[in-house]
Image (tube, rainbow, N blue to C red; front, side, top):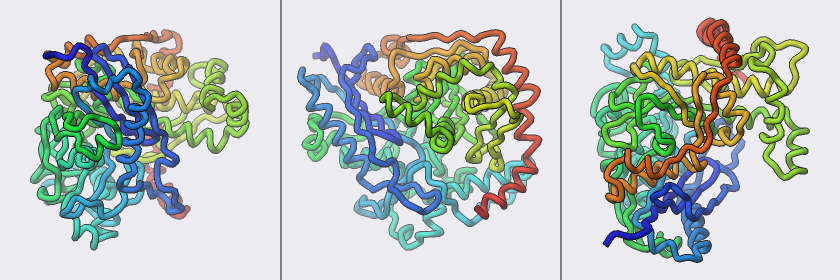
Length: 519
């Protein structure tokens, strides 16, 4: 018999919190809970280190599940047909032969780097040099956590039986089965993104040469990785034996949850790391030698550009320059950003000639990039800087969109937006003005959870296709249309200034690196 009101229980494992969401076939979150972390990473004085205890996220998941069960006064848990996890990317563990963690989790924000150099075959080396990608390949190699572990903790690497993504370990804790979905394998790993399988040779092996036998067993995404085990059931109230469906990473689920599944749409995420994603049935490289990632939907790809420090820049700005705004926000019991957003309408488009490039951390496409605040004059105030940050993030994502359109042949006609920054109407309007495109928000801020649950409903045959599931579960709520006058300002700013800053100053950025290392 078909259940009259089937639900999917989705856990959204984020950098700052764990959410448990009960989602129905209309895309409504009928019940939810959230456990905020006391600290996203273990506090440390070591610069660049970002680690977490091995079972930290599993314990928080159990807390969120138990809290959800306590709130379930209508016994909705009986209607759950499947469980999913959508998870932060490039966050890794090493396990021994008994699948026990050998060290803490290394979180994606970790900035420690390997000291060695990649050793690509001669033909690859010549090719990288000919297209100016030698430094990018070097950055990718140094950023791969496996290489850092091999260099700094060789005794632990010698004991390593499996090198896994956090999603893989969470699957193991919930089911006892160490396997994962192909669409969860996003990181510095030897993965063949085009064919959704482990790579035996090629570019990824130059960057992260992990033996195949140390990598996790893969299943199709979406696909069943196992059944909820007794321990998880006892700690959360989730019925034992329910299927755990492997869906995809948080960003891939977010794109699907925003209904970005055709070539004329793009998803923008204004989160800690800010991204723009395309969806295509054709594989393409958003930048040379950098892959598109597997979509939640089999046979589709998410071409992506990631601004590593995205809306985290606001955290940096608030921490260093906004004591007064923090005081006012505390008195009113509101977020500091809501105070700062009142500044946006007092500053015209273009921030009075103030331009910011938001590269507080280098990106894979330009490992030498630095943040720049250009055009500073004596009439500029804090409000101008704040608006310049918002505009700078959007201009960088716009720059990425143009590049990805050229490389993919796609033509974006509308944007869907999510992430913390999308809560603000003023911020979303600026995004629409910069891109010159309609920007839409859906009925919920839980886009990743919606996307993950869509995949589960489709796998469980509650919908005949992803298209049908999206039509039923994703609903446009707000549409922001571009202001033509402001868009003209941003086009001039982009064409005359912004797009030249990074390229024209690369030599200076290279020279600045030695001063940064001495800090």
